[in-house]
Image (tube, rainbow, N blue to C red; front, side, top):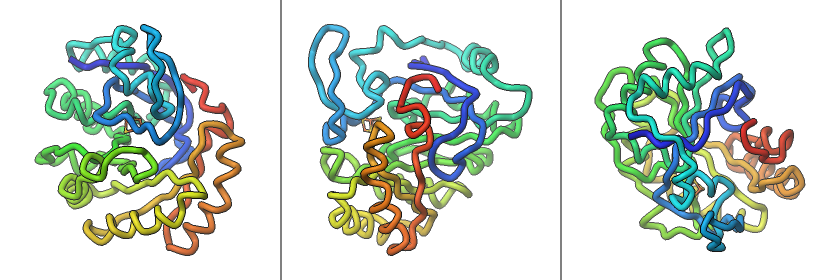
Amino acid sequence: MLEINEIFGPTIQGEGKRVGNPSVFVRFGKCNMQCPGFEVEYETPSGIKKCSCDSFYASDIAFRDEWKKYTSSESLIEEVSKYLPSYKADIVITGGEPLLYWQDQEFQNFLKYWIINNYSVTIETNGSIDIVLNQEWHKNIIFSLSVKLSNSGESLQKRINIKSLKTIIDFTTESYLKFVINKDFLPLASKEIEDILKQIPSCDVYVMPLGDTAEAIDKNSLSVIEFAIEKGFKYSDRLHIRVWNNKRGV
Ligand code: SF4
């Protein structure tokens, strides 16, 4: 069963390699991490106070009752198609952690439909889950590997899966890494990113400023740009936050 927190678009992709592309977002529910280090405070429907990332409503199963359930890929494709413009917008699969559904045949059917119909499909993932890539069409999926660093508050064992990163980067043609960094964390981030890059095949690396408001992004962006220039990484802004301040559904 596919559990969907929200579908929205057409809007633009606000970050990473396909920034600026008109896109429809499909946000899956559930995550294998909590990332308390991102310090977004919220309250669950039953009134429990917690701390996680800005996608807590999709990552925390306490919100599951609000997620829409799809038992077939066809019904989800039909729903997503309602959001598509008259041209081929990108399909962005996000979460939560969408790769928790990788082994579900309906998830595979859903992805395959868009790929074989020549849509650009990006999966936004934390890259920590082992998956099997064995279909020719899997090569065309863009995995946006948002690997978590220690500022996420998660343990090294949980957040870094070198085997999974290698599998994805080796098998696909356009997958890339992206790291969210705040300026106080730069020296440690530099070391942690270096440690990861030493162990995986080369691919594009993007660094992005931490922040869930335009003001917070502004505080971090110059330092992160300077860091990108120093290290030879690519800088990605977070346009959706600058324009919409992380308002949901745009
Ligand atoms: S891995 Fe991503 S979606 Fe999951 S809790 Fe961390 S930041 Fe949120």
